[in-house]
Image 1: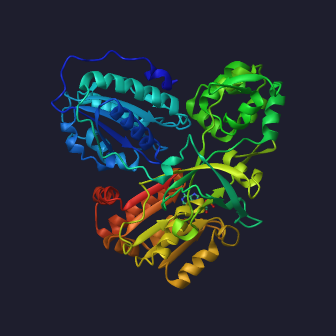
Image 2: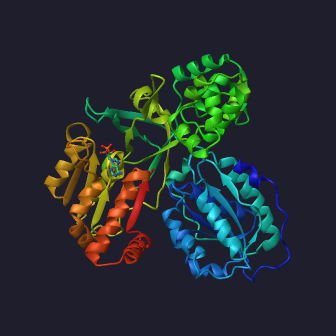
Image 3: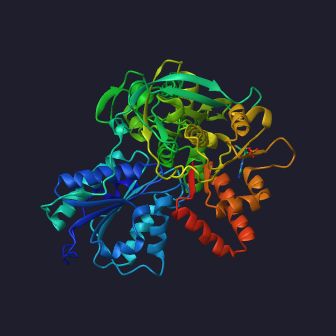
Length: 557
Ligand code: 2AM
């Protein structure tokens, strides 16, 4: 759909000469690092073409200095609910405010990253495009909106946009990249060139009677030389379950050795469904496709409303859709209708100061029931159920500069991480312990029940005893009749929370984005109002200041 929009090349508005500056400014707004990755590659390509490039995170760019930019490329990702990523918030707000200057001299283009399973698909990129346009800036190339499998569209856009800007800026003699982030050792391995690691340990850490299956997973990075920081994520490639692939082929009456073209390769449909195509997640495009193919009344009526489509897509796998509505498709049609498989990102639960060449994850196994059959998540099922200890798994580190411990290790931190949101805080605490950090550490953890779901209980108890954990507050939601959540504990201790903030504490939230992180933020604003004696808009500003000082960081999904 929207993705194809930008593939056609626009007519270049060459009328006015840009300002004297001959620098191409590239700004990225990135939550998990995808936008940063695209922007970094784009900068390197532009430099190779002789352009002078200034590459920056939006968080490091002074919004007002946009007046001095003549050529701007924006690569922006979007958070689930259409919000700008943390490092993009300030610029996003500035450009939509009354303070924004006229930008008639500015030439720009936007690459938007997003996920069609969300209602506000690519919203941040769309916003930037709209704001710049309203301020009079001239679009060099139409915006391109990318879905989760963004690589191909992103490189097409990058190539075209560099060609276009080269014509406008010309080659500069002293071509030089300013501010290009230096690549660490991990850049040897990437999403496209992952490292083949080994599964060391996979252990269920929820109790037998828990309604959840959460695994502690240890992966051995062997002699890869891969390094990571607390706050980073691990990308994990996976294969689909062969039982599921067989079931799908049999329902569709497709032979497993039929040949298809996928990713410019020729493979059997069985191979494609196993390792190249997404079958444990659907999206609205697939359901619309299947509604048309099958002409099934239920799907056709769903397809009339995007929200019900999205809701349905998020709880049904490909097998659920095709078995509920029979249709004839060829192997190639099926392959073309499915998304390319993408690795899943897990927040890393260990510090290398403690575990050296290992990386630990806290993986919640995704499971739900449709038509009396249990369906399991692609990557979580792979890690938890199909990988034997010692087996190979392809991984890479995704750096996340938006979730970092304070530079000074005497700075106090407050960590809010219910459920698997606990993962990065295990890494934080391991790191602070290894550094003998003197800063206070306060952990809020919550889950369903104390006896079944208290993840890493023994470790926290050890840290309380040793004094590393200054405070721990727990919220077990189902141990009593009324629900108690982490934000209730936060509120109970509002006075102390505000005191910690006033003495410079950093506050972190990790876990569920749609409900938990929002509710916690509301409670936090309430605490700032009450304890700080502020109006609601002053409290908003207080939090904004924290955010831009990197003292309020979120890793939510
Ligand atoms: P519940 O499932 O009993 O409602 C980790 O998943 C914990 O987060 C569980 O205890 C879960 O409680 C809880 N939880 C659910 N919704 C939440 C919300 N809006 N805010 C905070 N925690 C929530």
